[in-house]
Length: 417
Image: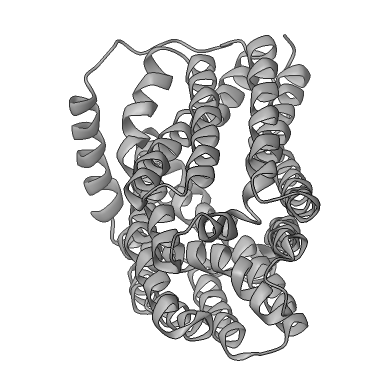
């Protein structure tokens, strides 16, 4: 297998898996409400999904490193397929909330199996086949493909629901996931991968905790950025999923599912635009932390405006602005973290950073969902803005503790093992 074929297979997997998964992203909250859940219960179900990702990220990472990336990806696809069908069954039977909580956690388990395995498979394959390009370019192609697939899938899912019902996009997702499984079965081969000796999950988690404390929370330049993460991540999760019913409320037709799909598609388009502009922003604004502080402040104001406006069109434009800004600062944040973490501990610290962000979603999503139950979506969006702005004091501390705005070449080399 050549490097070009490895990259082409990776992009194909990104397109089919994201296209399948995103079929329901534009209407998922509406689906849960239609199944008989309250607004608070709907976001609590989302929180259980996030909790599943927190609990199972490390154990499934052990599977990918000991058994193989391909095996992990196939297991994950199968689990997401099975839980998608279970979601459909729960919707048809108007199942109690406890059933939704259990299945949502299993859905989170499925995504942890194949999310990281895909990137690890790509890097292994490119290194083994003599890839001459940069990994940045390879991942950029994947990000663009991911955004396009999300846009097509979420808008398509909304249109399908509009002409049929809310359950049909889940059937379409299951069919596409089956196709994803077949593509991975035929195309993925573990190239350049040497399995680790089988270890216990407990010892693996112990190593991660030790390394993350030393090189993550123990690193003054990284610590405060990681602590700020749960506020921004939790606010973004609620902001995305609450946009579906809130925009329909402003639109005046709560059964216009195509509009809900359009909202997710707009966020996907904003992701593409934000990712494409990140490199330009980084060249213009050299101080990464200051750039993040400015973006969090402005996007927090945009979220508050979303909660205050009564015009559907204005809310849609504000949602696009918010999505673009969030997508633009994500690679800048990743670049800052990577420039301050030693190479040997990079994956470990980034994993713990993801865990903190997901943990924020576990707590914040149901709390904001309950507030929407009590006071409505508008006030809940105002609370969302306040929660996101809670990240600012920690970001200010991060900038104070950072000794250099841009690591010098000799400093970057010092971070190598």
